[in-house]
Length: 271
Ligand code: NAD
Image (tube, rainbow, N blue to C red; front, side, top):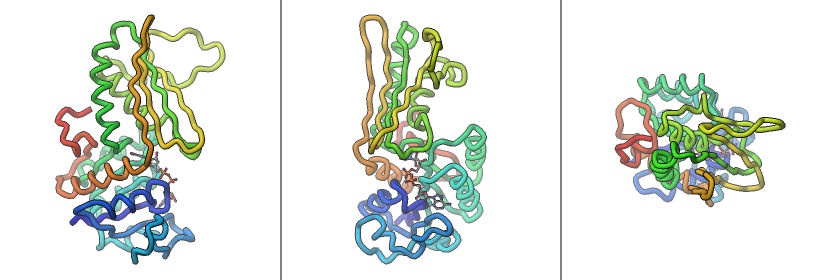
């Protein structure tokens, strides 16, 4: 039985994760952590998640429940995640990280923890998105050098704080890598005013923020006469939460290292 704690348990993903852990075989809910000083400290995390009392109170430090959990699931914010990695590395814990919006420096710091603890890091934990990445690789290899313009369009709810989404960036990276390009050189993240016509090799990103959209991503391959669009739409956060719980159960048996959802899903070809 994998004992799972959830940090950011009062957040949108945190509350969904409570439900996902309760529904999963082979996993138990060992604790929930809210922001230090939050008025929710002491609240029952089942009540927070809308599933009724579970007899587990929210705490505001990992130390308070350190003996109770094996794997920490973290969907919070970059600096919070990095400090949780330091704690878990020191205390022999494992992690599943869904936080997005890390800077290059923060990603490099996260990478370094691969030598210190086992953890899964994925900008999107849904099985469907990870399959979509494989489809994109195939499409890019077939079309990318044949005069097809590539654009990535994503839409999310009005509360999302980073843009483009981690998933959109991952999709762009997979396409770019398949074509020997890089997002640093070929990614175009802003078009405004007299920006001129698009260049052949650029990979453009467009972001929509509106209402309660859970997460939609389309990669467009367009040329004169036709357009192919590969789209993934999430209609519930449960898809991410279920993937995260699956990752938590999987990482409980792994050696130190940084892993991707591809590893969890047993896709030998990593993208
Ligand atoms: P949210 O703002 O609803 O939740 C984040 C929670 O973290 C908040 O409740 C906040 O109080 C809490 N928090 C902040 N600092 C904390 C601390 N020091 N200790 C404990 N808790 C703390 O946001 P959300 O929509 O749940 O998304 C969270 C992150 O997950 C974002 O980066 C988002 O992009 C990402 N996300 C990833 C996936 C995926 O599949 N990988 C899916 C959805 C969202």
